Image (cartoon, rainbow, N blue to C red; front, side):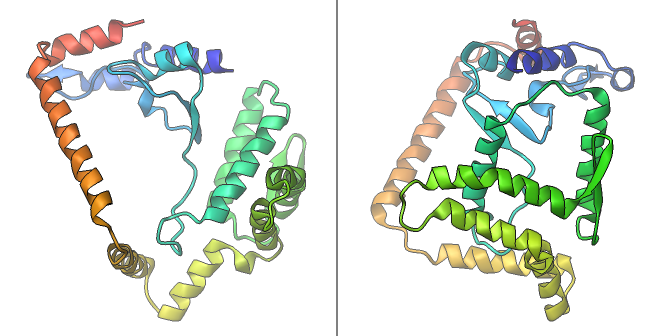
Length: 267
């Protein structure tokens, strides 16, 4: 729940952690860390997905969530697509949207510690051995293959994709769904297989191939037309940002020590 999420983060930023205490906070006039607690600030909680609310100036993220609820979700488990100049294809974005809506519509009962550990183990297994044929994952007291579980999820998503498409002509959500379905059925179509094939064909190491690809995309994007009106808009926004920075810094009367004490004391 949102209340439980907020409470757990607030607990973490107020609870000392012995190993951090041995480092010290401010030593010989220099800050080594902001405090010696489990989390120094809420932003350090690097979960797979984080509920977010736009924070006002000097407002804690948990305060923003508690006062105004969830504004959006930050999806933090995505890798950049090395074969798309923007890092993510539109079809991937549509698939993720349909997946999240499917999750929203399903029951989400409280999770026991044992189940949490199983989920973590499954995630590591997929990350480290996802291309292993017949990889088995745990679900409760039984096991099932990565492919079978993925197909179950896709089956649950199918009606959501149809609903999101409505009467659109090209059915973009169902098209995105079909693309992922084909990849689950044929692992040679997955992004990892495509990257491995590219490395094999080029004879290059990952550390050589990917920077070259990145440079190619950079040149591709820089070559796109950039009209004067858009350029002027960005230049105006830049000037506004610098002016606002100068205004904030000129009105700042609190030193950093006092600011930290004030910030962490806020409720």
